[in-house]
Each structure stands twice: as structure tokens, then as C-alpha cells.
Amino acid sequence: MVRRAGLRDLDALARLWAELTEHHRDIDPIFAIRPGADLEIRHLVEVMLRDPDGAVFVGESSPGTLLGFCAVRIDRAPPILVEIERAEITDLLVRVGERRSGLGRRLFESATAWVKEQGLDRCEVRVAAGNSEGQAFWRAMGFGDLMNVLQRGL
Image (cartoon, rainbow, N blue to C red; front, side, top):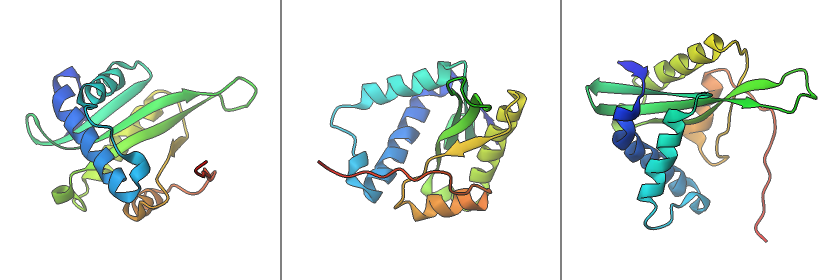
């Protein structure tokens, strides 16, 4: 079952968000969480849940047993462009044992339904270049290249 998350999901969502970050850390050490960041993770997730310009959707097998989540928010651009608002899916995770079950697609569909309810018609997602599984998923959802983010160490 997919539903909109609430504050009652805070602790379970914080654990999933940490799991997502560990997944990214395994792809590139730049995503490593500093030791002792557990309270900060919880705070960041709470801010996501309270954001009036965002929504978090969870997939659960039974009440309180979360198998994945998808966070989406509205981004506003300076009013110099025709498009001044767009949505961004900031995070999506399906736990390893639940992948390829359709849950990621259902979470994505719930997030984009919310985006359409907000009157928006475009959504972006950022995917680590080394995240081949994530790249394949988002391309299967119809996403394509818009910009490349280039970086280098100094």
C-alpha cells in the first residue's frame, strides 16, 4: 500500500533516508554521512514532512513497516522565466528486498499525482552519475537529460 507519510512515520523514514544515503555512499564516498549525524537526519526528515511545498509518500507492507519512500517538492525559480515553478523528486528508495516489485513506480505515480494536483506539469530528478540502477529506473519512468552537473576536487 502507498500512502502519504505523516509525522508518525518520522523515525522509520529517518532510517530509510539513512539507508538511501548509505546506498549513495557505496556509489561515491562524497555521500558519506559523518559520524553522529542521526539526530540531524531525523531533523531533516521532519522538515521534509512539515514542508507545505512538499510531500512524502511511503510504501508499507503493514502499518509501520515501511518498504520505501518518495519525497517531492515544489521549486520556485526567479520570475524571469516563463516557468516559475516545477517539481523535484528529491529522494526515492525501495528497500533492497522489495526492488523490482513495482513499488518504486507506485511511489513515483503517487508523487506525480500530487504534483499535478498542485497545478504543475513538469518534474525533475537528480541521479548520481554512478547510480546505474537509479539511472535506469528514472529513464524507464520517462525522464531524460536536461543538465549535467560537473564537479572536481580542489
